Image 1 (cartoon, rainbow, N blue to C red):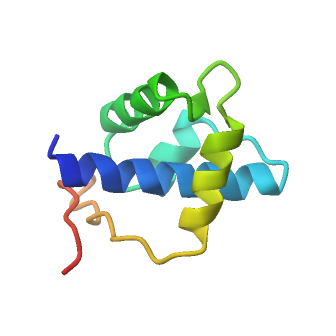
Image 2 (image 1 turned 90 degrees about the horizontal axis):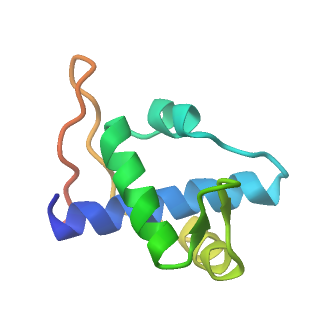
Image 3 (image 1 turned 45 degrees about the vertical axis):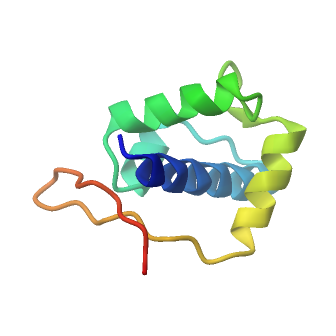
Length: 97
C-alpha cells in the first residue's frame, strides 16, 4: 500500500475511533469496513500498525491517550478523502490536490 494511502487511511481510522470514543460508542471492524471505502484487510493492516505505534489497543478496539489526542486533532480538520467503492470493490485512496 502506498505511503500516502496508508497515512490517509490511518488518519481516517483515528478520526472515526476518536469520535465514537467521545460519544461512548465502541466501533468494531465490521462498522469500520462499512463506513470506510477500504477493504477489511487494509483496515486490519492499518489498525495493526496503529497498535504497534501505541495509538490503538486492539484488544478493546479503543484509542490510547495519544491516539485519542491525534484522532481529535484529525476530527477538527478536513482530511484527504478516501476513494469511493466502485461496484462493491474498494479502490486505492489518493491524496487530494
